[in-house]
Image (cartoon, rainbow, N blue to C red; front, side, top):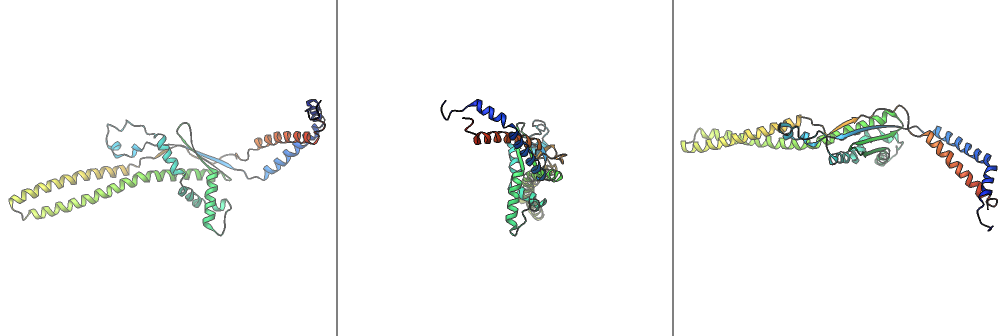
Length: 287
């Protein structure tokens, strides 16, 4: 037999004779792992599930035109969900959560440089918070913290902030349109009043021209007042930007650390390690 050939029978025989040492190492490893797990803080997960709403629900034409009200689904598509995801993952949203829940203190990052501590808290929050798109075009938001109530509150607040920002975008657009319409209506009304006062002292031929202008201005005022009323109705409609399918609630039990999983992995790794260590230490017997 070559000097460096592997002798399987000798290896098996050696492992059989050393099984007590292997088993002792495994038990020792499990004991160390169990004691370590006792000192590791428990973490609780809360999850919220949501879907996007169809942006057309906020469109004034969808609200006022009965012929198209039922042509579109109340749910949005993948692009709408991506837009919500983009808002939820903005740094400004994370900073707001850090400030509202005092996460600088939670992560024990208090220091002289408050901006640096806040930056580290935002980074830690991003690691704990998971936002992912599911195969069913749903947005799943979950987080692990040491407090079940804190986990649920952060997730629900994130959903609320995202909803408010999304709805504020289209509401801001309508409010600007309403402001411009009202300003235009006010200008037209002043022009109408000026023509009306002027017509009192006008001659017959000039009066006819001014009446035509007044009628035109009145028509413009009525048209723009109608449009302004539709825009105001759309603003007051409070169309949803998303629908929450599952609200985050405090977890009943912790999910981290996963004690059975850790102990099983510890046993397997210690078993393999101890066997390999014995083979290396007694390699001359197994060759």
